[in-house]
Length: 415
Image (cartoon, rainbow, N blue to C red):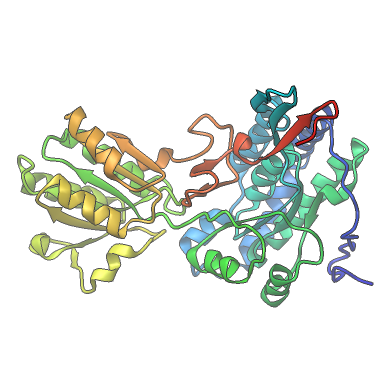
């Protein structure tokens, strides 16, 4: 019986195969070997990626930016693998212990999920970073990348297989599912092997597709649509710097900025707005404003209020006026994607109230939303950024990609 279609010489997998746990020494050795192989094959990875880029029609700027692999991206891949290899084992960490009156000892420890399916769009670096985090956490990895990055992904997976084999480990620990949309839907609805967790990384359409068809738990890496609120006591130079960075540093990132709310009581309100609009336009950003700002030159006025819900992933931003902190909080909680929001203010008390009131995974005072990232938060990388509240919110790092297990030790006690 065939459990997988053999496409591009892809081998079939026996769904009944029991994957015995790998020691931390073995997992680390595979990661270090993988880092060396990526360095050795740097030029081949980039050349293969250029084939994917040549095939892409360029219709989506954010998609193209995510698809591209250059020397900097390869450096980041290698750094991620070496950092993972140097981190503590997240599996088997004691979280709780208790001794019953009758002498039974109860211990709770972290444990691997088992098999994790990662479904993602365009980004070949996910094949390394997310795959590495899941592998380090003791899990078998199923990778389902987008068709636009197929050649890059297959090249990187071939290096995973080589790293595994060089360390005497089955290649089945890392598998690539070269499926089209119909085959992916069929697998989600009736997996041909045990899948314990699914992590989709991509746009809203991908996430909704996975949620609609998956039959096992899904960690939702939701939309960004991040906000910055410029409070009346803001340092306007700081506000300008933060907004420009959050909007223009990397438009394809889910932590990029899409909406700005400016308090009408801000001193020199019109001067600041004019300066902000000018700076954004110089950075090739399309500026859309609410009706209170429609007299400012080189802007477009909002035609449909639903735009406040949109994640752009493009050189586009919406600026609006609000009249109070409460108004800003209400708007952000209504429209944002639950990812990141920032307040620019010198008033620490106001900032704390704002941060406690905003329903988002990450909240900021006087800093760019671009920092919502596992590596920037000290996690050494991330599998995804969850906008769900279970089981982990925000960047999903190595220490979060585990479940738990109870160990109970007795000497014949009965209840």
